[in-house]
Image (cartoon, rainbow, N blue to C red; front, top):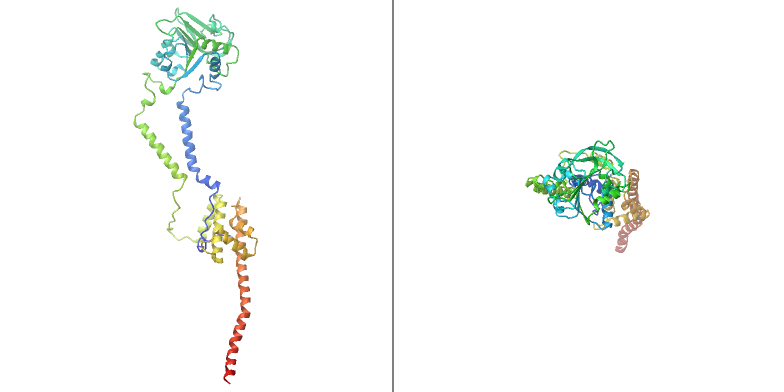
Length: 430
């Protein structure tokens, strides 16, 4: 059954049921897509600006490349481990200071870490940090990771073979120190260099570690890595772990990357965020009903009906199509049955069942039941609505015929009485 677009508006105003979950999701596709893009951009920005925080060699990270395991073990042994991002927070620490990713700091920031500590541990530094903090140590190349014996007299390295390789360093001139875990070829330096006897207020001891795997969660339990890491970092009662933040690295050591941006960038970002929020609110919920507009040309009702049906089918909106069919059928039935305007759809369903002579429950399911699940169920619903309207028409015809049959004897008696009255009047005159 199809509903004519020019169906009369008589009877109660029957409103289609609320939109289904699928229709709501279809309406929210655009705002949800915009929100997903915003979340993805925010996640990428967070990853880009997070630096090494929570990443490799971070004492707060439980990832394979993190160093949470060695920090927890040191804490269990009574060493106070503190993680900082700004090198100024570690400038006055009297204990051990370990610096990971030293290439992220400027020379002025590196100089803050070069004084006052009992031990300074540099993890895989390049030539710039070495020139500021350990001028007697120079990089000599790299080697593949492998397990090697210590090969030196440094007490902290005497636990046994450990993971070596990585960046290699050597001592220059007559600097006093140890070169441990030398390369296999013997012609280059080693992956661990310890300088001792520093003066002039600098760190008493500087340790350069070229193989960072001995500190990570993934390799800590292999060979003598744990013993080497604990001995290098746990000689003092306090340990300050410096994880630099790239946003705070600048040539002068004070300005950050955000300070290099123009001042109007912040306001532009705020305005863009407000505009995006307003767009999401605008697209997520309509502020009023759709306003009908007159068509520029006359369109046949059949074409309008077919176009609307094709749109419903393309959108797989069987629920909306069923609501449209039921609304049109209820309006036609309400006008045919002379249901009061203030009556609801339930009253129309009850009156329809009485006149059609069908089960009220089934009639209510046809007129007010749940939406169909697919197109087959929609076609069955249209057939049921059409059959129900035909049954109502047939019931009205039967009721009219029965009423006419009941009125026919009364009319005959009335006609007979009118015929006999003149005869009685003439007999009275005689």
